[in-house]
Length: 220
Image (tube, rainbow, N blue to C red; front, side, top):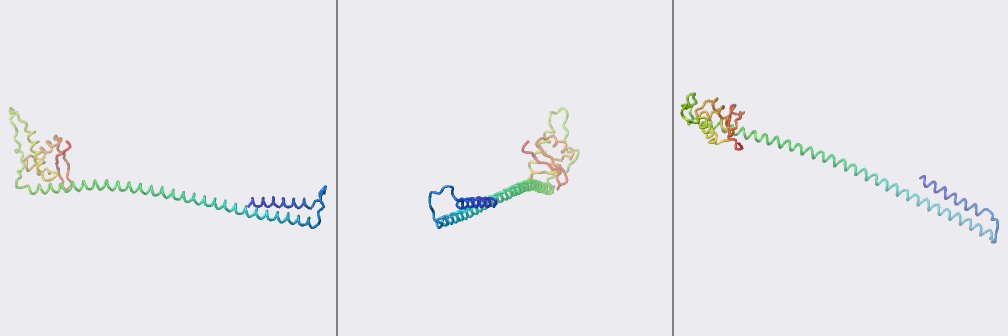
């Protein structure tokens, strides 16, 4: 609007100057003009100045409107881009959070699956222990044959082999200590002492059996 007002002022000054120039008597007149011709010339100047003024006002008005419209369109596009960027960042954060939650759930599921598998194996070992009573030998302290000193034997290695065979012959991954006691006739303390020295035997404590359980470690 300020530019329009300035342009109008300039046009009015121009028109007034032109009119003043027409009204002022010339210093030297070389042509003889009639009064009607002078009036016609004045009218033409005024009409031309007004027409030019109207055109200038219309041009500035439309030009200014287009600039404001373009500026508003740019501002609107910038605002929309900022909103899209904010939404994209929020979506990325949500996807990242979901991915972390899925990883946590997968870890928990794997742990729970291993725990359930171990519980099933423990139950199976316990059932095998109960159904194996008919072939079991009651453990006694005199069941272990103490070798004579002069005989060059390795009874502990034979006992290790016996314990390993009992564990390996199980239908399940884990074997209870009661089954080893029944199959070998060895007391609990001796089984624990010997198996702790065997690097290929893994010892654990079952939640279901409430006692020691054993398995052969294939990675040893």
